Image (tube, rainbow, N blue to C red; front, side):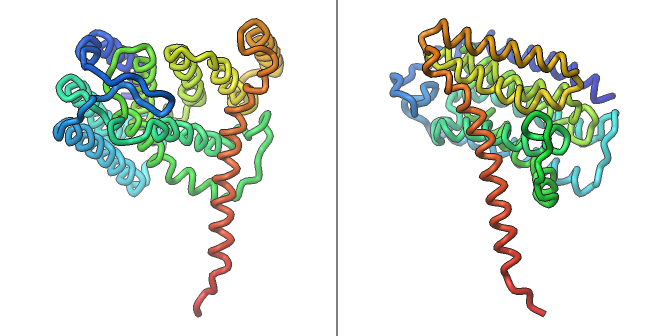
Length: 325
């Protein structure tokens, strides 16, 4: 079976799984939660966790995580080549992800609690942010960072990112997947759909679909929808920060990896500028806070720079160590 066919089938199944969460939403919704306690509080967890709620959440997460890591390691050591048809390891990874998705349904409906009970809400969000940052670095040779202009990263830096990105990406996706119970709020539904798509992507390693630019762009841009919906769901007025912040990344970087002409790009630039002025001019945020659109690009590009500086520091330190002869 070709990766392209599996991709479309996987997207359809991901939508069905999201629908299944919505259908079964009354079960987790019936769980009594503690009152919301502010920014650092995750609302969807048990007031009093049990041994089994913790053991099942952590046990299933660890089983899921290490199974996928083992598959990635095996695939790399086998020196697989990219092709249109699926490798046997792709079928295995699809099966593993499918099994653990089913287990997460059962775990939510029986014990409810997920990893949110024991880990910070910022850990889950931070993992996804770093995933997006590593994508920026990984795609730099093809689309640059700023308006298609290349960045002179050290080749060894890019090789390390390429070699190990799968391990971190799978951690970010699987950890975030097990961080949340399968609640049926609009934010959870879009979030789980996004996680299903990321798990599908991870299952297609060494397949040409895995590096299809339109597919990878879709995965990157989906975070816009999720972030805006969650902000609105929580009653926050700062949704324009997320909307135009992530769209700013599109304007600066992502757009330049797509086969679109200069006229299309200029049209998108204009639409972005008009939309920013209209939203900030007509909502309570006001034009005085239009600088907020720079927050997310500054964070992501700042993290790109910080990660590269850490690499250079390590490289410099190693070069200073005397070689014994």
